[in-house]
Image (cartoon, rainbow, N blue to C red; front, side, top):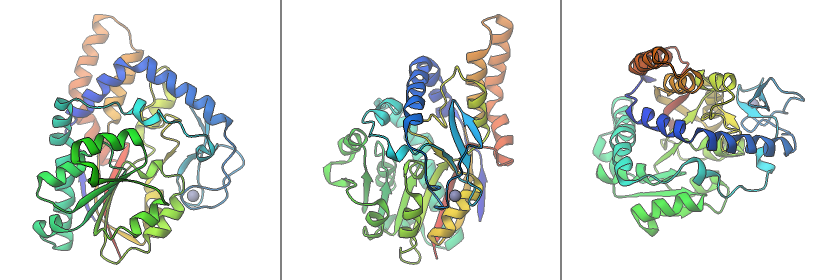
Length: 340
Ligand SMILES: [Zn+2]
């Protein structure tokens, strides 16, 4: 499998400034979400491998009990978030709409590099030409603001569509790409993907929001051989540990609201095995060092000496993150896989 590490963090640092400014509001929402999560009945099964959930937690995260599945390594809240009443504002509040300038920066620094990486991996590992890949049928599940679909369009793809569940996020992508480009999911996700006829399926930071990953993986196992599946997931890494240590600051990775499960390298492997997927490319990078800067800044003093140290820390963030990435400690994984 072709591995790549790290990427520039300019956008991540801008997001961190936004989190810092909205810290009290976001942290308050996360505390409310934790209270709500604790009211949910306990999970009966691991959302990924469907083995029985344990009776008690392995650890507490911001007041909510979590377990690390002994069978597959997946991390999930002990309380079953799928059995809570829908929270219609959750995505809109956690992911506010971006203005044009921020969209442009994200396109340049996140979505075009992501697409180019997928294309490069497929060219080098499968020998499929870039033009041929762009000519195939693409489906993005959980298409958010539609920026990845727009990146496809910018690179010359003509056959692409998106699928989503959240009305607010879907409205944003329809505004960008037109009504017909994006559909509302009205059936089990795996069935929708299997029935889409797509040659390449993308799921960027979506699987962690899927309540029944086991069913999804089994449905994906029915995809035709050669279908490409590209995805990114958050993993339990340095960021998650930092969030446990700093209760006054917004927990971006595991907020007990939109995020109540995290992957590990082991659970990613388990998911791919269930789905009959073979990894051909992996890109490891994260925002753990940027989170560390935000958490230290939020907890540190107001003195000039402290500010000087933090300014230096800000300049060191990319170097620090590169070390964490190479050691597999980063908060996320991007994977390109092919259906066997
Ligand atoms: Zn499991």
